[in-house]
Length: 378
Image (cartoon, rainbow, N blue to C red; front, side, top):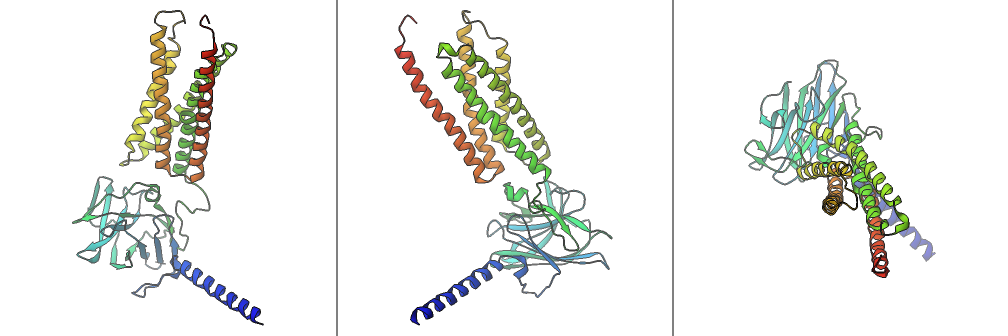
């Protein structure tokens, strides 16, 4: 009986623990949130990034939208913003409601974001009323009503958080993936969608970023190093001549072709990212493409082995080649930091390049043994 009673007690405590766990989990969703001003809304959505929430009610009789936007500023002195973009899907051209603490009091200001370089308080292109802000538990909340076009079924929404406010000047927000992905559409009748939860689909820009990353990781990050390993170690063995040369050339030309496609994709992404430039990643990429192009041209200017200038060509070719090797690996990791893919992809590349490096270490030892064992006459 005691054992049965003990089991029942443990079962009761386990049930209570699960109830507490799930009740705490629910508190992190929009559906469980209650507002101190007792505002009620027909719909809500947990937005895909920046741990933000949106609640809204659409009144078709007068084309008005009542919203409550909730987010935590990136710092205690920061700001949050929710905006509608009537003309595009990004920040430029958006009509924003911005909340921050002014002397410890939460306030809401309207900002017409004409461009990335012009973010100033101004009237919006549509009517806004009953705009207020609340600060609670480290979160800022924006409440407002706004006019939307008649017969509209959805609006483009953008949201953001920032670090500081100087007067009415907003501190620049971070440019990490959660910040860059803070945009989407809001279905007025309840279809809240965003860039990260649209039925598992990936938007075209994210797809191009992924393609850019894969092309460059494979070409600059793997094929070029493998081609260098082939050239450095296989040519020591007379039986591998001239096979090692054709393997080396095939690997490097393939890497250059794939890398050129990745480089061009990066230029296209950069031209579409007005106001956001990853300078070191971009500059290293341009340097890599320039040096690789020189290597391709040098192939046609290669003197014969017996030529007196061949030694100078070798010095040039090897110097540029090893520079490409080092910069390529550095830039691949910088690309990972920008793209922030799932950890498994970075781990896969680390394992792959580590395998190439391990093979190079073993072959380095083997080739030196071969060289030392040869007779001086050979």
